[in-house]
Length: 171
Image (cartoon, rainbow, N blue to C red; front, top):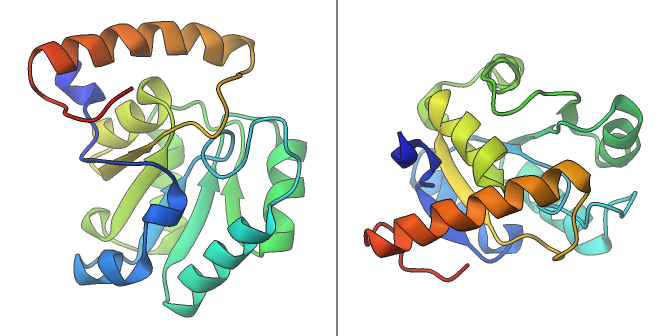
């Protein structure tokens, strides 16, 4: 069961996810988390670097859907200037939002990656839904109330994974 928390890949940040590498693997879409994946959880709008990342993905024909457990207003305010689709109140790790994003993008499962900063929501949900998952290092060390609780559990899971030799990267 703990293997469902194991991401397929680990990167420092979304800027390490390059469209050329995705396309070489047949990837045409990204389902990405918002808070602490694209920007710090308390930052309302996309940074110039994130705007550029979305632009580059779009230029390479890679569709991006933001899927967040946050409220509609938060996700809408962030997503609309990027001209990208979004799903709010996603209830990750449940599969519904991942499947909805896939349907919106009109892509096959093996053409999509799920990107996020949390094992308990993004990676677990992406793995259960059958997608390739990429874990990113959280942008900031501070979190909202529920995420702080999740991080404690994640630390234990990561410690177990390291002990079993399933991961080599640091926490």
